[in-house]
Length: 80
Image (cartoon, rainbow, N blue to C red; front, side, top):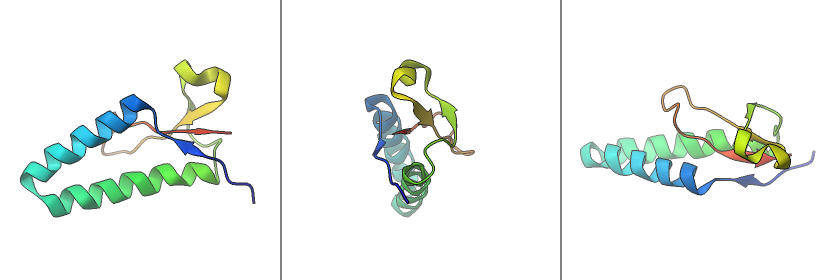
């Protein structure tokens, strides 16, 4: 099975950091749980890079965007 690199855009990484810090103000444990879930979801692009929708600004790289139902503003890209 081929594995691909999963790359986070600077915007996505910044959004993730902001979300985690915001949640941590209330509960560090919840923040770490959410962080783990989002990073785990993003890592699935390594083995299934065609999942998700195309990232418009990275179309030339054939990158895809994965979404989390709870945090629809967080994107991660994986290049196929």
